[in-house]
Length: 68
Image (cartoon, rainbow, N blue to C red; front, top):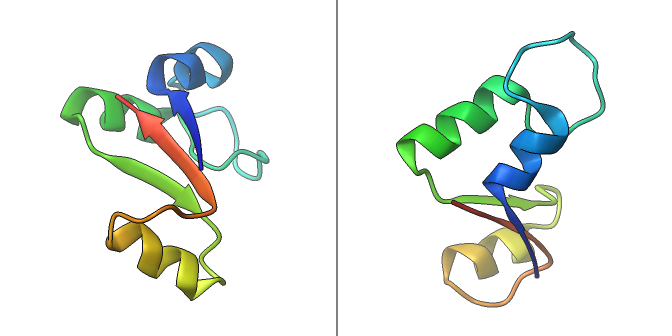
């Protein structure tokens, strides 16, 4: 499990909508909403349901936690 701060993501990618098709997991406007609303956010591979189950059950999972 990795962690990254929301402010680090915003610094790197910004909060504007640049263009469709950019290869980032979460776009700028979503980062802005996550920060403003203080939404707990996890990024994981949705094809591996065991990882989703682990995240839901507050267990160690293979993915990233976005810290507010």
